[in-house]
Image (cartoon, rainbow, N blue to C red; front, side, top):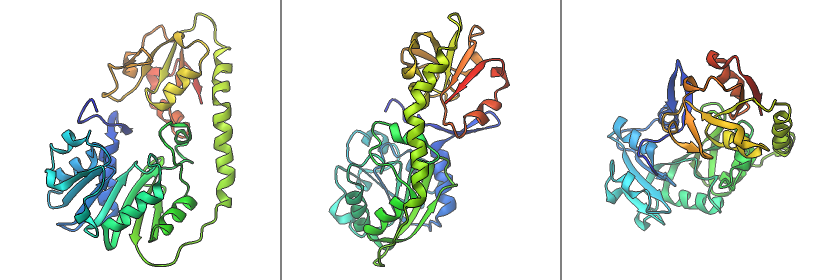
Length: 313
């Protein structure tokens, strides 16, 4: 809420950050053939940075916004008119109006996702498409312990959810957006799709084991450190915060490192967030607070940090 432009880094290419909004818009345009004049709704849109970016690239689209709060209206008003948005509940005249409805990382927050998805189905035209992105628990295991993520999805549970709400021809893409499922579902009256959950059980058990031991593993590493070692944490997001709170003596951490310019200069746990290039020469040990799937690959691209002792979750 502090900035219209604040965003999360999706990846860094040749030292240049690619932000999540930029990647979401590119993926949407790659996966859907949006004809000029397509009537669209961003459901649970928050600031709707995705549609703000999309409106600049495709002014021919008819973009509408909905969220359950009025707090984002100042952001919407910079690129849309009040005729095209609704707060708290969708407008009654919107029923059966939309050719495409999108949702970007909203359904993990919604108390009754089946009820929300039924609302989406009512707002779509027959044959309309729902384009939805939610966290993939198998490639983004932090999803399990983020306090306001109250739903956690697998491919099987998504198929069950969407089929139960009157959708079919459900495509679930696990590759286009790292750490997430990209779902394209078409409104349909076809019969419910059966799903098999057995193949996911082992993966979920592995995630449960990871989180049940992560804090203990962190403290065990901490006890191997000499009293005079100086610590820093790489990652000013969820994983970095987790590492800090898991330590027995978090006061030893001098700073957080992050490449996101929207975080640099802020305080996390009363510690400054700085660029990796600005790390204090006294730092000897780096706790890596990044998604374990990609952490080692990211650190390999930072030779300036090679001389530090590192701990990975």
